[in-house]
Picture 1: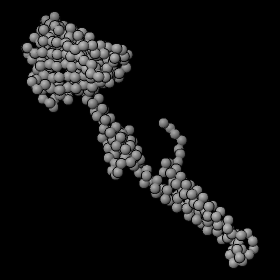
Picture 2 (picture 1 turned 180 degrees about the horizontal axis):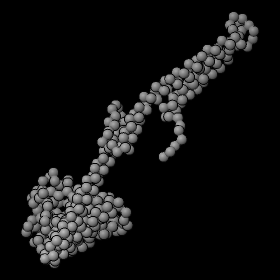
Picture 3 (picture 1 turned 180 degrees about the vertical axis):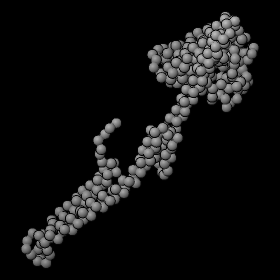
Picture 4 (picture 1 turned 45 degrees about the vertical axis):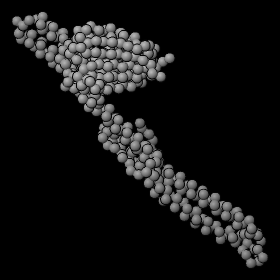
Length: 359
């Protein structure tokens, strides 16, 4: 934004210090002047004929007062300039860091030393903001790179299949079309997941009263054939649990959790339990499943987009696109809730979601 040039803050503070000192000095001299002249007689002989009269005292005091005022003004200007420079030095550091951040350098930190004051609080807050901004930008860059890679893979496979079909007319066309359809479906699923993740992060949806117990039952009913196919026992427990939000997004949230719990489970004989309950002012959804033990260091990465541990990569029809828990995390944050992932000692995962409750 273009602004007209003006006085610097240091110069303004200098004039303020000097002006305040000059006014204080003038008031002090005025008080001394008033009290002094009050007791000096205004006649030619003075007091008892031995002290000076008011005329002589004024002629003697006025030059000294003028010199004192000039000294106070110069002293105020010089001292104010020095003091203003020392006081504004931290602000100069913050400004330099802000300019570096504006030029794209987010790794710079002020790390202002000294005791705690307003400038150091501002510097610490600015460092915290830079740290979060750098982490967010790095996450977005990593997300964009991974999304590009994930989208490029099905497109490259489609191009290869088309080339094969064009060069080899004798190849089975039905098989080729089936593989193209599978690859295209995966690309569509990935695109829809990216759009849903973007929508949940923005939080621009209409809120309504939603019963999470009904949402859990609907998600379980939808995924029951998948659970039966894999020999997984799926149970839904709990009572009515209301929250405010998007019914569509909350259904996708629970569906993703239940699907992950089914897919990443024991080969046979596994269980998945979905429980809803109201705890004070919070509405809680718990999804617990059996499965193979998860390393504790892997758990924090499960909500990152496209982050899959080696033990979690699957090659069947439910391999997914690596956005299941990332979408869940985005929906939870958009609804002002919290997501907690805890590995079970016997294997599997316990996922707890807490959302603001409603009466």
